[in-house]
Image 1 (spheres, rainbow, N blue to C red):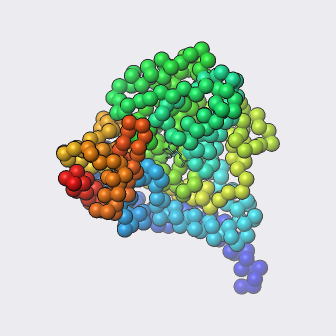
Image 2: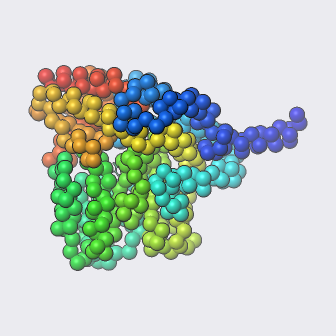
Image 3: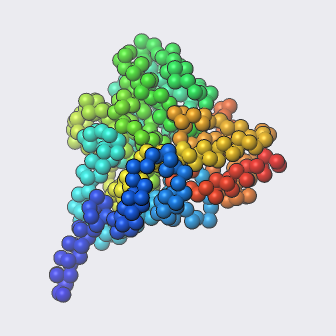
Length: 433
Ligand SMILES: Cc1ncc(COP(=O)(O)O)c(C=O)c1O
């Protein structure tokens, strides 16, 4: 073959292997046949029943290199590893990009963006015209926090249990523009939706314009009654921003059904997309009034794509999201949600029997899923954290936030039961001193 034929066939091949949603996806190469068989065996089985089926989950675990790592990763709430197919996709796209970035990145890889938008929207139960792809939940939510017009004296209600980046963004607006940022203080767990809704309601004044709520509170794993808060807020003409960093790709829900106006999430947590990927959802009729965080030809446009003008960034990471969706969809959201909840319940109910150990998360299904946290009387979070590393190479997340002094534990679909047994054994040893 001469050089130009060579080049043509190479271009044909690279274009064909593109696209997580094509028949040539890496997921199809690696898993489709085996997983199809798996699906035939378990099709139609109830998600709760499947949650404890170790034969099924053993196959899923093999899809992650993290399942054989020399450490036990129980801080998936911080950031989650990607399955092998996602890692391979990013590597493949990166190699392709570096053959000629401006061509392969902008003319080839970027062709996948609209397909990706559609798949993310399908997973979120919303329109693709409401989805912007970006780099993380911070970028998604700060786009809205900085992008809304507010006047001096206008009030925003959030809580001390929201994520620090978002609190800081609101405080910066307070400093620069004189808006008023009020923060509620919750003591979780709370197993009463009305108590939570009432707390927001009681803080409302005629000046309140926005409620900022975290769907799954990262500190304790509390699931917040977002829809009830949003209904109450809308009756008073107040908009609602939802921080969904820990919910999208884990809990089964449609974003519009939360009834918020704005929703931002990371994709590198429970969706297991490449690290450095995020998503913003804006209700269609609200898009035009949100100023883009960076810039856009027409900043008042009603086209959601105005939020994607991020400058040069990693297209391999962005397109790698597609394989994470393939992997996720092959499991199914409900099945994943129930498995991860089962894993949390598994270690937490055993841990509750350990003397001096306290659980700071509700085990009621509607109030928690993956995340839960514990304390041990007489020990600081960093002491428990260090002991877990020393005794079992177990990675968790120590938290000291006001009165909350805990260690957060967050498994994922690749977590093995034996690792959770090890966790409980180590916690027991630590408690004995
Ligand atoms: C509730 C919550 N919101 C936002 C974020 C920020 O996510 P990212 O690092 O993807 O910007 C986090 C990160 O842990 C979080 O827990």
